[in-house]
Length: 330
Image (cartoon, rainbow, N blue to C red):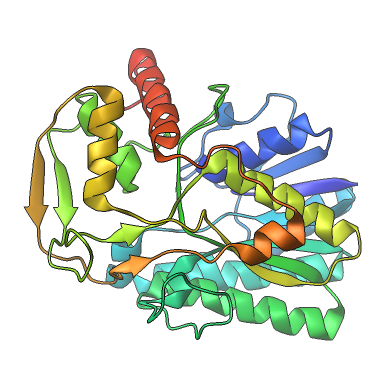
């Protein structure tokens, strides 16, 4: 039996591939390499370059490798880009997911783990956010992910495809062993951008919005270390394989940090100051969103190992310094 990881050469996906390989799982990767890199995954892991919407390619992989579980990361993820080009997001995130799910049903895949997002909640009225609160996404990105969640629910009822929908909060950090990390030079993740600025790869850091109803006026987010996140996926796979029911669960730590808190942490850990420019709000950004994590901790018996902002920043800094040394950050 094999696990197919879509988007497995990307940031989170490559961490998942290493974690699965470390656990002795057979793994195969499908990635279009738009933002992913072949070097991010172990050399022994087969990589197919293509789209999740290519039904013929996906079907051939599922059959040739006896795939029984899919972990689906492949997606477009930049909220402002989704506002500018919604059709791209509905194609990459929704239509391609529909095709992948259909192939999974046709080929007898038993378990499906979906990389969803806290963006499905929109601007929640209560914090922390529980999985049962109404979903009111504020961007095409969030809506494109929610549509896939709905498809999985319906397909689970109609065809028995057991699935886990994991709603990520803000993912950051890098593999503690230095094997992979966030390698996209133009990435928009705050901690990635902040460490790039601290190390001189960017001239300054832009803060979007300082008039939110938060303690310091900047947006508040729940940051989760990428290694803990993929550990939650492995726990979800164990849950499904053990006969567990389909589930939707938040992935975070249940603690929020403001943008200014993160900047202070990067300056503290790096021991470097850097320019920060205060700008207006971006469309589609909620003021504060922090996870309720009782479900994932209790149902999956999941205990994070890196639930500390300075640790997350330290691993991100180490990875970025490695990219700079290798000339791979441009």
